[in-house]
Image (cartoon, rainbow, N blue to C red; front, side, top):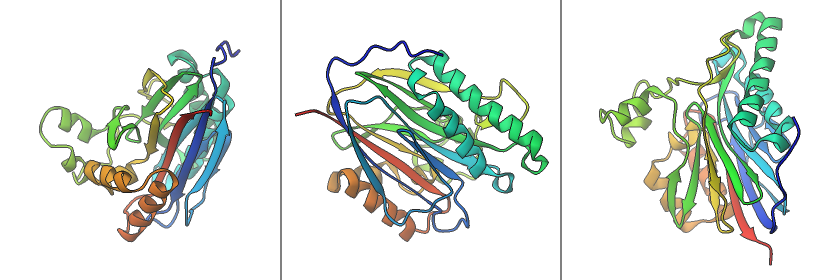
Length: 269
């Protein structure tokens, strides 16, 4: 697939802060991160990392492995590797779907070669930024927020049982975090042999020179309420926000793996 996107007329700075960690209970980390052209997998960071770049298209994504003993960490790594390989082509729903399908094919092949890994898979959420536009996407219950001031605006839409209950008015937003079926997702990228099992949300949005995006797995929004995320961000910005978030999640003994990426965009001066 060829890259037909035009180059942006103006350059911008991108500041990235990110982390992935086992959490407070899990013995292993099934999450993976895609940060620009780097896939980070099978790691547990004691502190966030940071990266800066200027005038470059970029893709960032969090993938949360599912299946426990069915090699969720392998699934999240393989799917993000497929996205990285297609980074320069992702600028619409078709090209995004092609990249996700390539990741699913890798999982199907792995499941055939490793019978103990049948149904391995992952949920994911991410953003592909190219010039002054971006594609925001997710499958499952990982999320992308745009931060306006201190307000966290959720751009993605969860594919989960609790999301349906929330939309039907049966539970409120905070109850989504504690509901007994909170971990039941209705879409994932899996090696399940079903070519139509992936339900993908995506939207194309303009990118402003002051935009801040936050990508996280359900281990983060399950550990912190919407209000708590905003209160922490009100006091700490950039790298410090990720640092405080990671420290607080560990202190709370987060019950799931915890992973996040903060993306700050600013004009080149």
